[in-house]
Image (tube, rainbow over all chains, first blue to last red; front, side, top):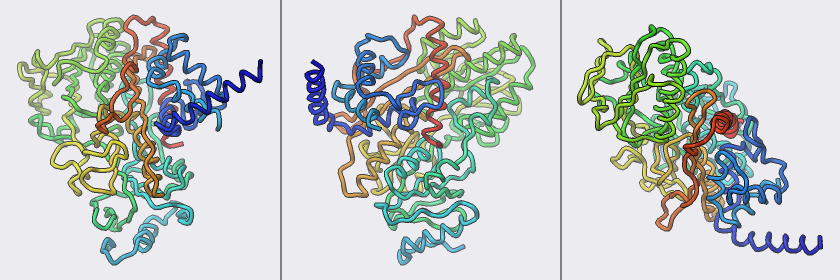
Length: 96
Length: 427
């Protein structure tokens, strides 16, 4: 079961890597730094992205996008990204 | 010192001269060997500082030319007016950028020579570039309000470039007697920081409510609507009762003339004698851009919105308030976001690659009170016409029916945003 999940997850990553070529992952992720700090290293009250696992970050962004998790501004912002872009952002920060 | 912008001088010679001019303690120029080129960045604010840092991260050699040794941010300058922060809290230096290998040159650019790709400096030298980034900010359209010029701004501060003007306005608020009237003249669109005048009214009211509760804030507006208007007006009623009065254009809010000698502000319909006058005049791109006709006869500079390269002069990129960046507002957040996209585009162009497709966010927080924050956000992409446009279905303002805890959280996030973006620029 775990192997199956991993392989499905892996296929998703492969599929999104191609789709995310539309917008460069670094350009997507760097925009986040305006609030979350360079490379997601927030020095203040805004939650840290740096160090988050890609799967956790992607899941949280989807929850914001779909209003499954309440936030102040993140529900409004997450709606601006496609599924593929959410994965690209998550992989970018998760891979740092 | 002779300028070295003649076509005969090599880039190396010009740079050597610039290096000599700045040899006194500004560090050693990093080696050129790995870099795909040399970018000169003019202006060390939200656009320029960010661009310099992110170009260094991309391995590009960068010279940042900035007149002032420190930069006081317009964002959060209203907290200084409200007595929440001292000016030091919003003032930043360039040591962090120097540590990234940015050559920081404290000088003023007096001219742009697009033909031989160099800028001339007040100090007498010239610096050549492979690509130039201008993030020069705004200048004021003096005289559009009759009687309002640079001398008048020493009596009726604009405080729309942070620093000495912010401190002047703060001193005037401290000196004012209880029961006084503070007028804020808000300009027509477009202008730097659309919610700024209204956050200013809020935080001045916060100070007055605490120290001079019989006083008034009178906003005289050249517009009939403004950013986050519903949220601001609800917050004003909740926190300050009727202390803040907003006079829209259609009710005669437009300030046509001022007389600093008598502290009189003349609108289209009325005459107001006030105790403190904060006159925020109409704006245009910094006049530096005129040395290369980059505004093309207008107020703001047209650009290719993929790369931020001027559509008038190739090789010159324009960021932030001075540029026409599609639907993005003239904000520090916008300039920071644009700078990162521009830096990536320039790094690609210098290496002979295609610029990557851009993505932007803008989030403008405003403090209605120290524990009462509101925001407007948007995500931007290029549309089919190549213009920066908001992504439909995303963004918008804070909910109107949010509770006090939500407003307090947004105030906390406003402070967190400030810490993050200034570290993204200068850290």
